[in-house]
Image 1 (cartoon, rainbow, N blue to C red):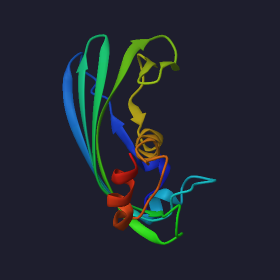
Image 2 (cartoon, helix red, strand yellow):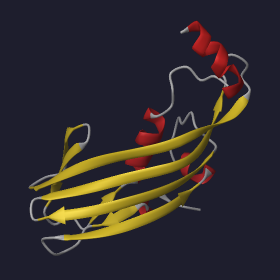
Image 3 (cartoon, helix red, strand yellow):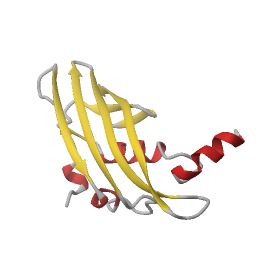
Image 4 (cartoon, rainbow, N blue to C red):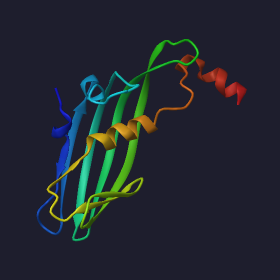
Length: 143
């Protein structure tokens, strides 16, 4: 069972460098978050870190499926996930969020917690209208 504190990517101690982390996530990941609307899914997460003297870039690649409930019938269905997102970290004197995908991180930080980023990216990829795939043709006719 994966724990939140285990989902970190190590920051290289040198001025420049790169590393990569791979996670296989399942239902236990979603249960780590309180008030979660998602409970079931399987995700493959690949995170690539690139560091320069003043900047760190994380490239998130997330593929898999999550289970959603149809808004029309409440029937569960698998929804495919395919996400590519970049998060930037400026190296500075404190930890703080500067913008949605831009953060400041302390110079002496040795790792970056990535679980919340993964969770947010997956939740933001869920459509507002959750319809079972068998209703897809009907929705296209309405549009």
